Figure (cartoon, rainbow, N blue to C red):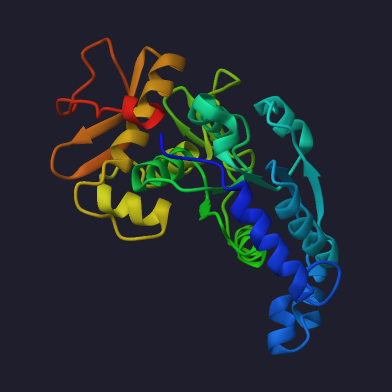
Length: 297
């Protein structure tokens, strides 16, 4: 893969910011446009995020953590050996990670973290990467991708945007939903069969809840994409198909006597619990599953 470390570039950025007074003094942006105090005061009024940082560039970390301290944020540096369990134990709101440090295991590691920490906001901050790599990371569950060299203030702004979006009050029905043998719990952001968690990732949970609230109606791929990804779906994009495949596989593994996600060719998908045996299952033929191996390659 083409993801490589950009430590040297990050040190250069750190040096420039240090000269501009970003380390320990007023930020470069504050010096250019007046005091940064109003924005910092507003940030402190809300609950300060706890940020886990997996990055080996000490100069970049120094500038970044000094800005976090000024904003009243808490943070925890992690080693490159940090497992998904370590991330869970850190109880972080946001993870900033340089995937290049993880080598060949980076995609497996990212998938595991996304699965075990569905509420965690993940910002990938890494060196040169291809479009395919960035798309892969975002589809696997990363919330943002920032390319190095970058200004730490940009990274701070990305984290602020993610945490503010999470804090934004939204009217939300937390009543459990039931489909076949599956209990969907909005209050836990998870689904269960016979009390056992399906271990859905954030995106998989969003998908099953959206389909469940449609109450058996068919939702188009475009409608699902725009709701989950917040942008119009590009032509030939298979993101929805990939996540439907993952969700369907988890549902059928946990509840093999039922079929849940049904494909309607040329239209989209619907969620309906229908038993496999007894001749009660009347659904359209299932479409060929999308190739997902390339996402983890």
